[in-house]
Length: 111
Length: 116
Image (cartoon, rainbow over all chains, first blue to last red; front, side, top):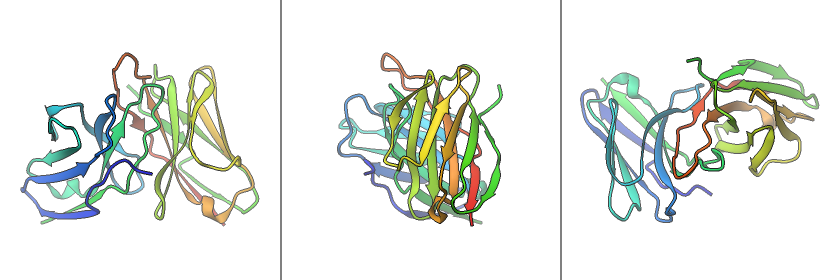
């Protein structure tokens, strides 16, 4: 049973900022929040990971409130190539990567 | 550095046959996880190997098995194939997170298995 809830799909236009929110009410103290991106017939690709507050890298930002029961992935100025499925994962790979994937959010970017 | 390599990329098998898939992790990574992805069930965890030992296991029947070699390369085997085993099989390699350090997992391109 997935520990996360995220929208099934989202539409956006090129150049817009996209925010995808994930709920994880039962997050454990040791759990990290990680987002992956997957294109058709490819393996998921790591985007960003955080534990609390805000994390930013060259492709995205991750906002985590103090209670850590949700998180928001922010993609600035999306392009057509950002059309993919985005997975929010909650867990710790201490002891092995065995995280349960949810259904993910299918993002469709339009011109 | 080289990424995770899975072979073969595509495979067609007949019901009842068995199949072996291979995964070479990133150099230095000792943990290899396997996932099955189907349109209906999404990404499902099969098992994880570390230092040649199965350390974690998902909820799959015994027809699905795996092993890991001393060089961390891993294979998974599916015996008595069923039509429902048609899927994209993905492996992921990672450093073993220790002391609170949580590292990312790197996925291969996958092996597309079709059972006819």
